[in-house]
Image (cartoon, rainbow, N blue to C red; front, side):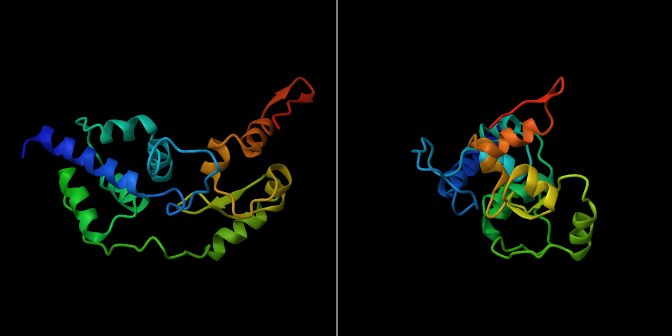
Length: 184
């Protein structure tokens, strides 16, 4: 198989897996607006995978770019690929899938005690912890005072949907003279 064909097949594979995954299955909340794209949007996959939108778009378009195994693992997790699909993803990227056991995306990982202690000690600064799906899973009291309640909040959703969280994040760092700018 030629290099060009392999890149195109990789892009097609990523696109079909992105389109079959609903925002709800990916752990994102959706509003009542109609989505023009079936499944996840490219920017949602990119954000959940920890890569730029442009880079993910190039990859899905089949452009000849190099992909690290860490990014492939992240994409595999984001797109909730089964073992065979994960191996195919690595093969199309010109790599061999690592032999480590495949992690089930449905498992909820508890917050390590050390992270809970650190979060409790950072009382002068707003701080929160997100999981692999960018859901806020823990926060300190100052973060709650500044950003409001975090119960069930997904940071990607809160920032991209234009909700008040984006304004609060921006306004908490924006000052004009002595007057704080209100964003909400």
